[in-house]
Image (cartoon, rainbow, N blue to C red; front, side, top):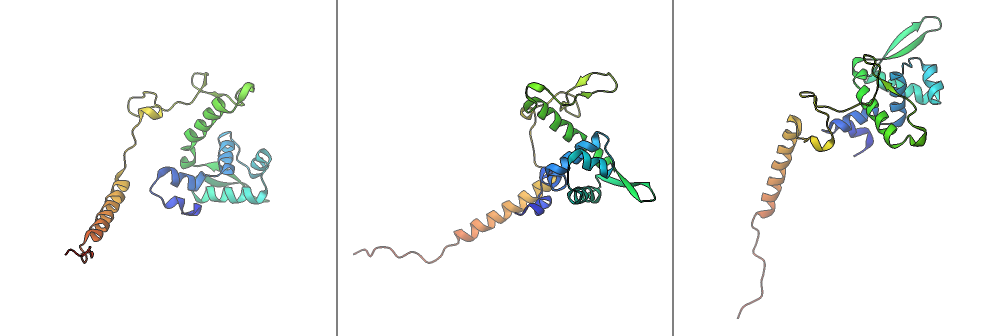
Length: 180
């Protein structure tokens, strides 16, 4: 499978990576959540070439992650604002921040602190059950196939069964040693 086809997989991770799966895109999203909106500000923060930044921003607009909003008429200039779809990526970015703070920050400590606006405390993002609010780890969650994957698995099992049946069809008896 080619990388450009990854979005066609029946896998939410693969489909998501087809939109945000390169390092520049993740850094653009990080900056957007830090309230960067203008092309020049993204470029200054990231040090990207204009061409590469324009390409990534266009892809994010096409994917519905950003909307392009005019902020100046002459010359015409635009801001890139996160859409609802884009804002829904915040837990992804916050989880990357938490992982990086824990495993990559070293002795200097985390470069940023995430502060909960309501209570004013520095917080670490947690993953919790949407129903009972219990904090979760990978060991607490079971992944089960959803409807689309169950349908695909059923088709795959049917193909395997047919393949086995065609292999089992009797053919001519093999010639054995002559018995006298």
